Length: 459
Image (cartoon, rainbow, N blue to C red; front, top):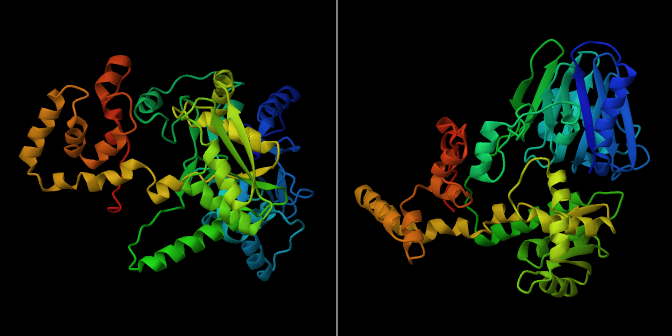
């Protein structure tokens, strides 16, 4: 990964040495994101800082990147997987390239398509583009929000950063009451909120424009669509196989070694299997715990042997688990109440000893219904035929049944609307708990109003 810090100045002019050094310190705070290279650009209106982890076109992909006689300056964190195809299209349109990087393809694409360029990018990215001719700053974040992009307004200017800590250090901050209340509901702060009142996130699938004398203007460029299709089962299987192979293949476009996480589960095994077809010498990585029953290492080892890949295993001791929590919290920026972040840290650390890029397989459970909650509508289907009045009465009965009595949870969930039931599967605090805990509790800020979840169909 890479990272950057940027600022659109409130007052035109080159910053004094003290302010420049403060800005550079903010950029150095994300050294861990890009240990290979450091770069800066400043003119009267903007200041960019960049940290690079070299993956594609190692020799020429330096940033901040200038294009068309320095009309454009860009910083870009991420990777665009279809850059080869986009480059071919731009060559046919008469564009000339001086590097083999995906960075140059992005800026050329932007020059031709302007804001429509962002919807043509396939990958994970956070981008800032300064157009010196139009005196306008453009920015975008990938459709799934894989790459972070924070911003905050200050007296000195509008700051952007890949990590929140880069724009906390020079300033004071206060806790966002709304974000904290939602954190107690979701175990994370939904975007664009962060736990810092003054700092927000660019939302996934959005781009923005910012002229020096006008406010930020956000527009959504990505819209997920779900269309029913009438395929035979065999056609579905072949389509999924084709899409999976294509996805793994383009994700492995790299000028540095690529590895894959391996838990032994279906998702990571499929990815590792495809990766081995593409690169037979692929390395895989697994972690486990010393306590019996909490480790997937044995299964991962068997899977690796069956696939014929070299697997690196790391066992996490209880002492090391606890000792690394402060460091993991530091890198998370905002709280995330998901214990899976801890083994993920260890497996990523182990992988970094051997490869620069790794396939994680994140999101497979959501796409393929891997969690038990996705099967629940089938088991609760009988409640759909229960009259509303009877369902309401059953709900009241469930409330007085003692905890631990068999059937209580089944009745509770069967008489609860889908939206409330689904969110309730993850929450720890009920609304009454949050109201008692938070002196600033806001009933209007309850999750049912804050988030509208569209039902796109029945699984």
